Length: 101
Image (cartoon, helix red, strand yellow):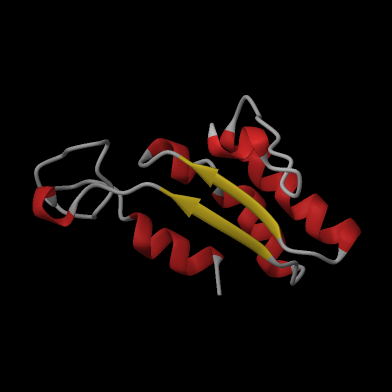
């Protein structure tokens, strides 16, 4: 975010919730015919993107979503709100596979 502060080409919009960010990215793609972009933190933040991404996928709007993820060496240890699907944690890769192309 600090690097984007000086950009003349990219205007970041900070939202209060990740779900709003994904719907805003979908709306941007819908009305401009350009790529919408949103990002979120790992774990619960990434899960909050699903609603907007599902709409973008069902209506074929181009949206790129980026989220953080725990380091592979820490996989299975529950670090960073881990969502690897191991040890009864949610599986974010399976969930994103259902709402993205």
